[in-house]
Every structure is written in structure tokens, then in C-alpha cells.
Image (cartoon, rainbow, N blue to C red; front, side, top):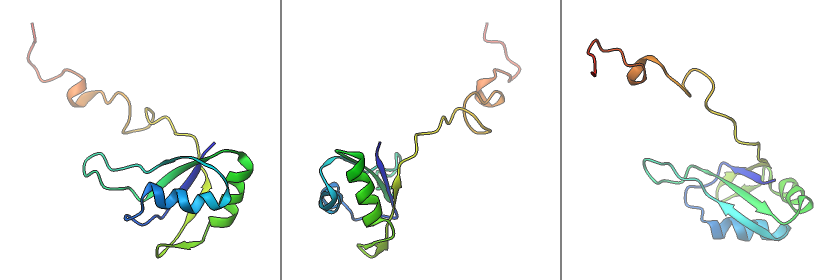
Length: 106
């Protein structure tokens, strides 16, 4: 399982996060997602540690803590949701996907 870390400063680096979480155990991986269009950090990260106990300790110690001028939001990461359901995902039908337009392609 991994840890979600929210409300991060946009100036944060993977090394910064690793150093903070290393106080609670061995950090296996840090992921800092970026915006696809701008390349800018999105203000959150995911951290994986060596054990569930270390992750629990980091969550207890860092959730709500002030760091780099912001109050951190730290909790267990939730599994990624399937975005192919709902009104804006999956097959959209009419727009560009449904053919329509009145002209035959053949």
C-alpha cells in the first residue's frame, strides 16, 4: 500500500519528501505527479515505505503537520478508480465517436 501526501508546496522535490518520511522508516519510492499539459507539479505525492507499520507511523506523525508553509494531508492512498464510467468517461457516443455528420465514407 502507499501513502497519499496532499497540500504540498509546488517547490517540493522527491528528495525533500524522502528526507521527511525517512524519519519514520525506509522510503522505497516517492512519486510526484505532474500536470500533463504544463508539466507543473500537482501539489500531491505518493510515498511507499518498507512496511505497513512504518507507513502507519508516518501517517500518524505527519498528518496535519505544518511543512514548507502548508498543513500536510497524509493518509493511506485509495486505489485508483475506474474512470471509464460516468458521464464524461468511456464511450461518448455522439461527438466524433458516433459517425453521424450526414456523409458516407464509402
